[in-house]
Length: 421
Image (cartoon, rainbow, N blue to C red; front, side, top):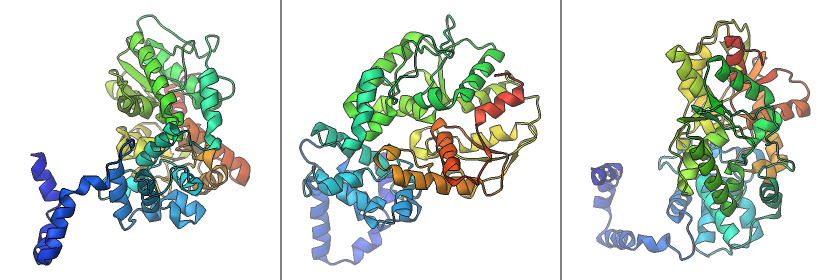
C-alpha cells in the first residue's frame, strides 16, 4: 500500500519523464540510483535528505517566515537555511564557520514553513538536529552556553530553580490520577495559571500530583538550543519520575512541556506511556463529560493567540478547533480573532531559543504580534502558553500604548467555573 502512495505522489512526473531525451532520462535514472550519496555522510545523524529537498524548493514558505520578516535577510529564509545546513552536513562548508552557525539559529521553531510545505518538511526540526551536530564537535555558540550551565547546576532554565519541596504548588495526593507537570516558565511567570489549574482539579475532586520536590526542566529548551546530551539526561530522569507516579494522564499548562514529553522524549529514546494532554484539552474533555460546569458569565471580549506548539501539525497536539470549541462554552465571552490565527498563527518571538540567540530580533517579533492581537482593543489578550504570555507582557512594556490584560485561557475557565484562586 505504501508503494502505491509514493507512486501517486510522484505521478505528475510521468508526462514530463516521457518527453525528455533518452540521455536525460538515463541521467535521471542514474541519479536516482545513486541518490543516497548526496545525503549520507559518516558521523552526521541529521536529516540531510530533507535538507536537500528543502534546499531545492523554490522557497514557497518564505513569505511566512518570521525570521526573514524581522531580519530582512535572504540567507535566513527556510530554503536558504536548508542549503547552508546541507552544505555543512556534506562538509562543503566547515562546521565551525561562524556565519553558518549563526544561520542555524535564525529560526524560532514555529513551523510556519511546514504549514506551507508541499513535502511536509520542518526546517526548524532539522536545524535543531544540526545544532546537536555542533554539540558533538564542541562548536555551540557562546550565547546558548548559560542555558546548559543553569540546567546542570539547578535543573532549571533560570539561575535559581523555581522547583522545591516547600513550594505552595507542591501537591502530591496518594494514588493520583493526574500528574500536573508545571513548567519552568509557569513557575516563574504564570502563578495565576497554576493556581487556576489546581483549583479546577480540586473542584472536580481529581487526585493529582506535581512532585516539585523532584522536578527538573522538561529539557525542551536545551534540546532546541543544541544541547542534545543534556536533553537526553533530562528526558530519562523525567520519564522515571512520571512512570513512578503511576498516573493515567499527564497535563501541562506549558505546550513546550507537553510537546517535549509527548513527542521529543520518544525521539530521544525515553517514550512516556501515559496520556499527555495540554491542560485546556483536558478541561474541555471534563466539560464534555459533565465533570466540570461553567456557571459564571464572563462578560469580556478576548483575542486569542494560538501558541505555535498547539497549532502546528508536526507537534501531535493540534488543538486549534478544540480551543475554539472550549472558548465557545465559556458563558459571555466574545472572541475577536486576530489577523493570523489558528494554524496560520504567528510566533511570539521566543520559540526555538530565539530569544537567547537573537534577543533584539525576538523583541521585534513579539511587538509585531502584540499589535496584531490588540487590533480590536480586547479586554483580554489570551493564550495557553506561559512563554507567549510573558512575551506579550514584555511587548506591552516596550510599546507602552497597549494595555489589554494578558491572561491564560485556563484562568478564564476557572473564573467561569467559580474557582477562587
